[in-house]
Image (cartoon, rainbow, N blue to C red):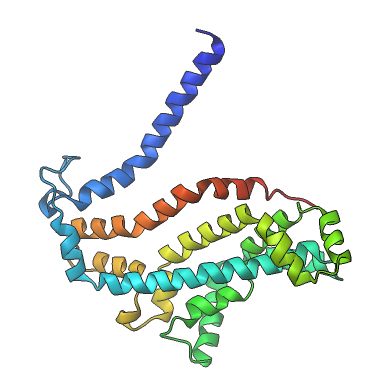
Length: 274
């Protein structure tokens, strides 16, 4: 056996062990979701009997379908808003020449250093004054107002790779800036758009703090709040809680599985360019 093959086998074994290490927690959640409640903290990794009733009981514990509908609505609107707004702002910072462009871009990037605790109270007061509390508006409408500093940065870096000659040719042919953005630049940015969409979906789908702050009506709750309700009971039923966790993480796994190539390509092609 050559040295190269030995190295390949070693790398394969090492990566397999790392993969197993990361998969074990997910496997434990899935197996626990079908265990009888008495066996949740037992030493047996595998259930003695598959208890699918945990999934049925879940729908009696919380209004799961209502929470699912709310989560899907908030997440869908957020993904659309952030993808559109961050790509528009990223295009303005990369493909249009204007005075102070780079300085303002650095200011936008610098806002990523602000912890969320700094802006949480001022933003809450603003939404309270305009009457948006206990509605989906604070969780959806702001997503159309820029898309967040990191997403703007990612889109801007990707757009910097678009040849300037292509943009100049379109302008000479009489294309407006919006038409260049919509017809030429945006179709080229599918990997970056997919990356922003996946990250937004994962963040908003799993967001607990936002709905907790702005939604006081239980009928408007999300799946993340539903998990919090199950975990916050005096005597949590862990098997049912794990069943809810499985159903909640399933869409994230499916979406990432089908779009991972765009996710990886988007980061790869969004290197720092000046």
